[in-house]
Image (cartoon, rainbow, N blue to C red; front, side, top):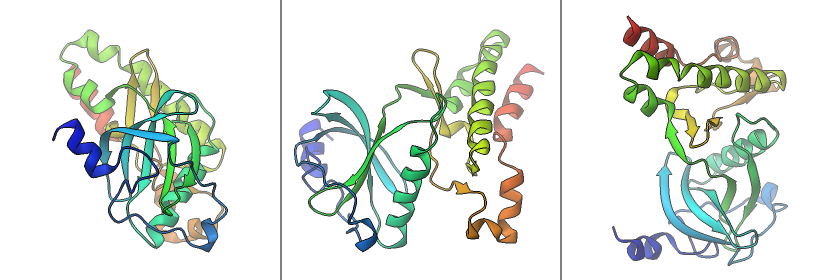
Length: 218
């Protein structure tokens, strides 16, 4: 798909309808600020999941590139989108992607903007690490992830979906934990269900990472 075709499909500003089935905000979200129609200019799609589509966009007010997430489902899914942004926005740590803004468009489409992390996922780095030296260089990133998760735990938040695909290694040595969509806050009523007890105890970095490092160093 050409860049012009992509702009036509997704809309070239946040004021346009970026996703075809964008949820309308309910009364609980009417307090969210409404973005100016030309505040964010969509540049390209970065990825999509069940809850949101992520774009690289330019913040016209600050003249910087950001990651723009737009909710793609209605009802309860829209509530989960807001919840993720608010949980992540309260975790101020170098190893956790910062949230810049949560709001809605004039069309009622929910969105949030985050820091755009340029680099590769830890999964890609593990697959490309074919020598012992290359594998050892990844260990500091593993420690960074543990520190970020420890901080989240100190704030009563469990990630619940830690895996190499959800960790970005930036171009300048950054290690950033992404995708807090299924995170839970300890002490809330939903966290008292027995089926969530294991997730509270087991929010450790995905064993695929350590297993991959061990198997390749054998």
